[in-house]
Length: 399
Image (tube, rainbow, N blue to C red; front, side, top):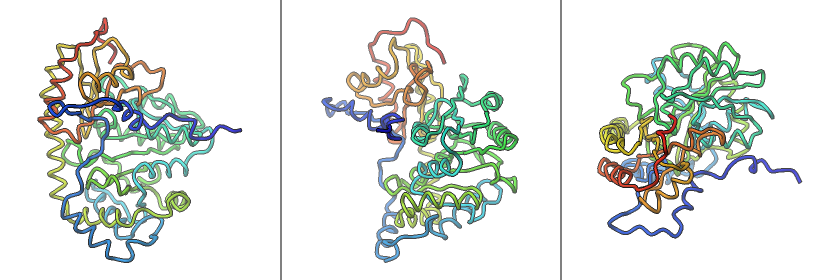
């Protein structure tokens, strides 16, 4: 019997972490603080829910739609992206997918064959690694330094004849780090010179702390020859359960993506697409408020974190929905994380879920996803971490 593709990878980390809650009770005066998942738990705003309810009365909402998404949504997203980035994205360069994960999966299917390679900065987004594993594609780890920003020159040394792409996530999951525009530009130049693709996952672009466009890649009229942009509506309009994402690339590559979508889901969710379109057209100011709230939580992380430093904690990265913390304890993060549930009533993910098994940095870090924890909750989180009584590592640990 051949080994199934799914056996090539690990258990979904979020599901694995939820198992740590089994048998643990959380009293009313010390409830669980869940910072394990980067997904809003609040429903879409009321106005959007009303628009979705109206869409349910349209027969077309319940039928198959175009494989690559509703033309109106593709056009609207192309116009918005062109405006945001000061470049040109055409509707025929936009495809709508069943979430951003499907966008990545479809792109990998269009790029890679058995034994091909994709370079992933470490720590990586675990679902990217999982899909590469299940596709028979080798994920080539690109180590990052203390600033957690990948180095294009280091990536250049990893390119082989089997390399098909470099995949970046900015703002980053799991570290929160926002990659500088010049770094992203340099990765584009590297990919173009090497004849490979640069996949840029911008799921969290709406929560970037910088004013203006985070890069200039779309100023190039030939951007789609090298650059593939991924996006998600899950975070922007709280449409996580409706699975609506997008991919921006050349029309020729979208023809290949269309084959993948037709064979897997046939088309994206009609209701989710209509919600995304309505959101783009009507929720600009609301989304600005969501961004401001996330930035206030980021500020609370930055200003409140010094209280943990005397215990040996270090804040290695923060941004978008995430804080990446180096812990001071004499144990690996994969042992610490279940212990945090029982001793601190905190559910967070160990960085071992975002790194290769032989990468020692994974053992020293945890990821905190604060999308569902307000400023008061962040202060409570730090209070619980501050009062932990666990054996400390003999040295400060590696960054």
